[in-house]
Image 1 (cartoon, helix red, strand yellow):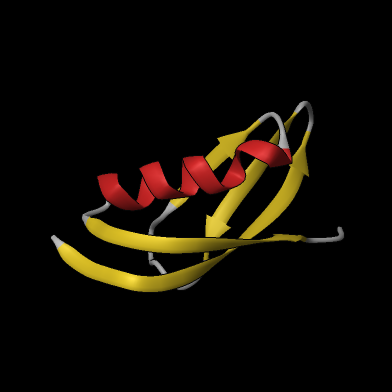
Image 2 (cartoon, helix red, strand yellow):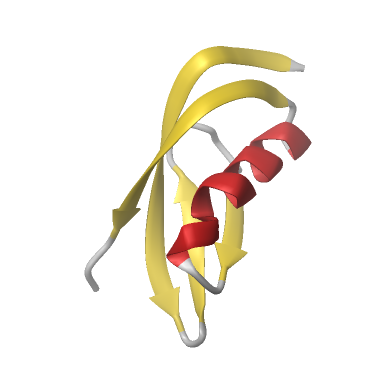
Length: 66
């Protein structure tokens, strides 16, 4: 498991129909989707854990304009 204790991550969110597609640029291969921007931080934490990265402290939500 890769450690990221004390780290923060920027989550780039793009609207895709009824969902938001979320990409974490600093963590290669970490993607998720949410219906509400309120759910981004929790879902990014879960996706990072599944990708083997533990200990994210904060997630910055960035809404990308298309």
